[in-house]
Length: 163
Image 1: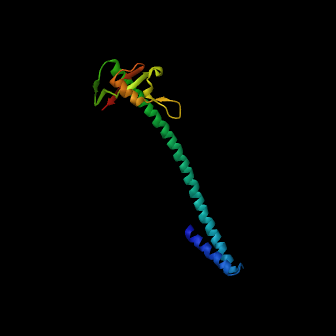
Image 2: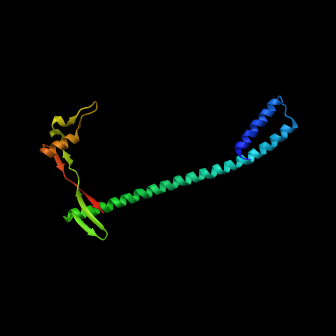
């Protein structure tokens, strides 16, 4: 008998008890004893399964944490390898090197703002919301690409591409 069937049986026993005016007849008492024993066994099984699943959940959490730590370490290692390869290509003034099945090359990134002397930035490039004013970097970059602005440096960086 499953727990759903035991629940239905408990409802029937409660109904029979109410019908008898709350009087516990020998038949109802025997049925209740059998029902309670069966339900206790079933619930003990449910409890065991629940405990096992909770233990498995904790094990999975621990494994997730271990794998996340490993993933982060591997990503850092990849970033270091790429940075060293990019450094070498930049230092050796090479833009492409074929290395076995891989091609290491540098590619130009979109121009970006470098160092900015905020005191020299014209007022038209400042955004003044309710909070402290800040520089509209996008508008400033577009203007500085078109015409040099004192105190604003436009830099052209490269990035590493591995195919």
